[in-house]
Image 1 (cartoon, rainbow, N blue to C red):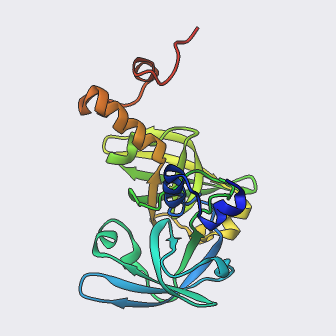
Image 2: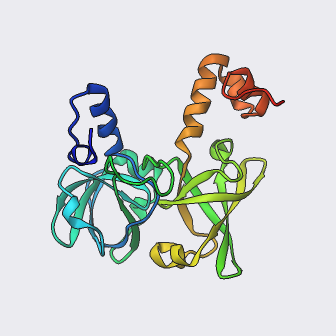
Amino acid sequence: MTAATAGLGYCPNPECALLIDVIKRMFTGIVQAVGQIESVRRHDRDLTLDVATHGLERQSLNVGDSIAVNGACLTAVACNARSVRVDVSAETLSCTLLGDLSAGARVNLELALKAQDRLGGHLVSGHVDGVGTLLERRRDGRCWRMVFRAPGPLARFIAEKGSICIDGVSLTVNGLVDEADAARFDVNIVPHTMQATTFGEFAPGRAVHLEVDVVARYLERLIEARQGPKESRQGVSRELLQHNGWMGSRR
């Protein structure tokens, strides 16, 4: 299969075609544009957003395609040369901050991967795992160091030098401190990211979308299937990985 046929989403092999279909709903956490909410229409239990897609590669977005809005995967139900319309279900509203958006709010946007695209950040599903809080923002040379708190259920999926997605932005965890019912972690924001995303607007107290590394979730699930949920909840250690055949013994 060539890059050209991958770009068209065509593959005669069923397994290959399934993989391409999955990739079309994945992201990398590399924000492509900062859009702006034009209107919010509230219905009975859900809502519709019209989003101005400033600078986004609009020619590759069609009705039915996936687009990440502040890291939440949504489906385009209408689009034109300057904006996209998405519906936000009651389920999505229950686990994200999209219901708090109002006209004029700026949002991070990313189109779903093409099969031949570079994986610039890390694999991001667009399924928000929880809501975190910015605790601290301080200068660190030309960059900014931001400290966040993640809710307890997500703590075990966050690791130093691992990946995490914050409001749709792929970042590396610099430091991590486990607390009684949460985890405190910090990330470094380079000048480009401050300019190319909404991070420049962040101030302590701001709530953000968090998505943990999908590999960590699958790893826990696989270990749980082999060892049971109790051992999985105790955390992933070198010994546990060796026991389950994920890595060789240290020599």
